[in-house]
Amino acid sequence: MTKKIKFDFGIFKCSEITLNSIPLIKGRFSLNINPNFSKEFKRPFWFYDLTKRLKIDEVISLGAYYPQRNFNSDLEGTPNLRYPAFSDILFNSKSGPLHRARSDYIIESRKQQLRIISNFYANYLKNVIGSLNYNEIIPVPAKLEYSYNSVEIISMEFSNLFNIPMNISRIARIDDYTKEYSIICENDNLNQRRILLIDDIITDGETKEKIFFRLNEKGCNNIDMITLARTDHNIYEYNE
Image (cartoon, rainbow, N blue to C red):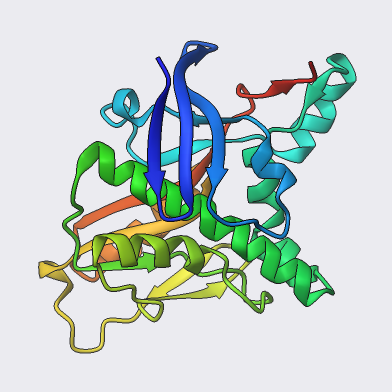
């Protein structure tokens, strides 16, 4: 049965499917705006069916991210594979590619794509679980070399929809090679705070573990994490 998920930029028409034993929702966006890069949104999208996944995942993620290196390798054995639209948008809207882009038009267009996907995610999650009870949302800091942290776009959509303040000054990234972070407390008592950490992709959980450890050191034990995607190349498209 086809259902519709409404969000600020339009609707997502979808149905339930299962791929490699993973419950998904599959559908297409019908946007009420015309994004600069619209062709990606005209392709089919696969997302996790969060109504069936929340109880088994420690970190909530909207969908699977298919790393390009894995895609290029898999393409050699399966030449009719197609890079998923969700992975395409996510890769091109990450801080790294945005940092290297020379065109302001490309940068703003990719940010727009990320804003649309993040707004959909926040609205979809709200439909599934209702409210979120946190004192602050913290976006994971980008690499020191990057001029912009794309995770702040994801976090802002959640902050606006769930009415939770976003704190971009709580965590500082102090070393890129070892992924070390420091926590800024000032006069805050972190024992009493519930924190929602947001990142774009989770792969092996190293970032999560290091930031959780630092927050625990400051007395904060009420921490959860949401990511836009989870690295997993079991979800893909075939050229038809």
